[in-house]
Image 1 (cartoon, rainbow, N blue to C red):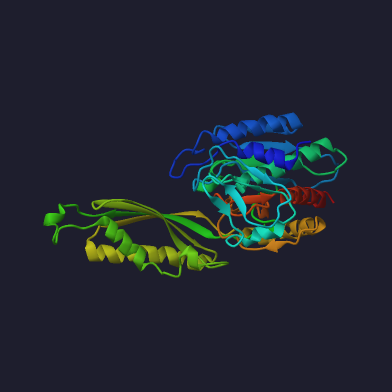
Image 2: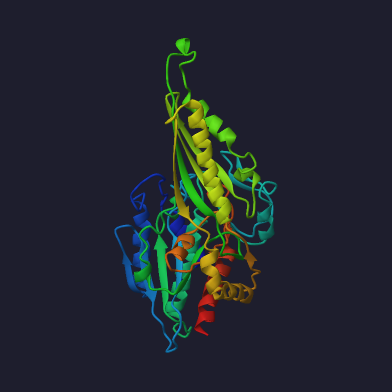
Length: 407
């Protein structure tokens, strides 16, 4: 049986970085390289109905081995990694018996994972911790989830004495760019309920997430030689800065936590004549979420009154909604996951997601789908890490969930 570490490192080395602002799914064809690997492995393990499609989704079934009528449970993870930092040539390093001190990721580039900056890592002293080489992200988000599910699959298929109902497996592309379930076949997947394995530190269990929208802001200026610019030039970049300055200063992600929402300026490009800004707007509360979107448009209208109609144009598109209202009617999903963690000696940490998962959208597509930890920390950056023992515990938790539903 392949250890979860072996699987994770194999998957992490396959570049599956998704690409923002692409209309196609997957947004990068290279995501299909991991999909092909997973299809081959699932077939080798003996899973049934293993398939992929033109969009790179991977599905498989572990048939029931009991006569009991049991709910069909799904487990889902995403194959892509964040566009925030390179996912090419990922070179994981295993720090055996971590000593609780700073970790030099790259001596040549003088990149160090400092415990003063990331104190949470100190709790894993004595464990084996997988880190980056400082040049890329690690990809635990969400290849750790993929690896953990695959070890669960292997365990169940090689141990028929473990009784279980029908279990559905799904691996998705493009979660990191908000299109992970655009073409997910919920009906064909055939699960009554599911869990995404896409959370952070060991013990995390999440069934609340942000309501989220993406906003594109287009600004039309007027370019003219600066020598004759008086009363004629309209600098689109300065107008973009003025717009940003009118958003509530405290509603910036660097000043928010827990249930507090925010506006985030993700990118700004252009010049004097025209500029384009990309924002994300998020809030757990549906009313406050709508207020944020209304305020965004209110500022657009105000500045158009000031500088002339058409100077600012905004397009706001909702991305996903808070899954809480879809999960609460099926709260056994949370109670059983809590029990599965406690049975594994893990303390459940029920916390709102300051982001979203495929499960949030799936919950609104008719598949209630809370989120379980992978064990990873510091996602989307060069300081990402994951303890081996945490991944092992997640595998145990997944098997416990299967066992609980088999009872």
